[in-house]
Image (cartoon, rainbow, N blue to C red):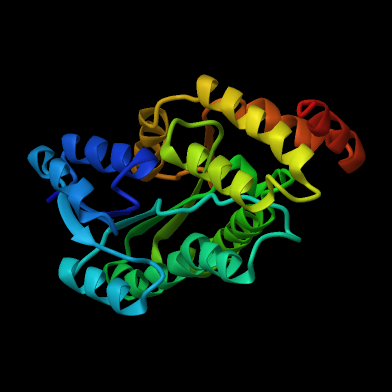
Length: 266
């Protein structure tokens, strides 16, 4: 019997690529997102569309109830909205954490009882190299991704006893609408404040990053590799600049890394 997978954020980017790729490889896939109109096109490839707003508990409950049994949960829904900490309204900061952290945690809570009962489950959390490296103007995005890394590490050792694996995916530059949306938000929030010079430099960097980004299918293949491994790695890294960036973060001191990072924004 094929495994049942819930992929959130399936309307675009990594979530869409993952839902399609797993469906094409024999999985029973539910693709969930807010934008139902963008999910309808996936039905012809065998993906079952479900409405899901991860900021609303009633939506999360309804989504999980509609599926019944989830063998594999891929938490791909995410938001990358940028701006200087001083400039970002707290309402926007809280919304970003609701999507990137608390929505993920709530879905895991609801999926775990059934996974424990069947003594099998795979929880895949889509983090980012931004869960290990913090860029200026991304304070709330990085706060959420750093927190997701810690949540995953703690959870892994809680649920291992029940035959459940927790896998973190750390993409580097990957083609998606998130880069453009994040850059646009950054210029809206901080493009006319005392941080406008830094915002302009980052805007150019994001534009260059988008040109070199890999296709989302690269990350979808990593996810499939992780969920099919008998003993999966705790983290899988892929995408533009991901491995060299994380290696430098490990080797350099904080100040040396800061200097290297900021030199790319001139």
